[in-house]
Image (cartoon, rainbow, N blue to C red; front, side, top):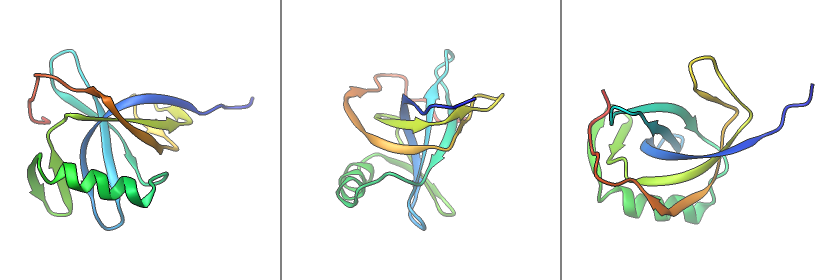
Length: 110
C-alpha cells in the first residue's frame, strides 16, 4: 500500500534552538493545546529569521532548551501518518499561515 503525505494546519506552541525544532499542536475543545509533533525539517533560513523576530515578542516561558510561545502563530506541516494517539509522524514544515491566527483562548499548555 502506498502512503501519501497530507498537509494540515497547526499552532506553534514552542521551539528549541539546538538544532532548530518547532513544537506544533492543536487546540482541543476545552481550550487547552495538545502537542502533535516536533518539526525539524523544511525551514528556509529566512523563515527561521522571521519566526524568531515574532516569537521573541510572545515568549511565555523558557525551560531548559524549550522556549514556549503564546499559541497565536499558525503554520502548515506535511506528515505521512497519525499515530493512535493522534501525533503526526514524518513531519516537515510547509510554511507559515499568517492569515490564520488563534484568537482569544490563551491558556497555558497543561
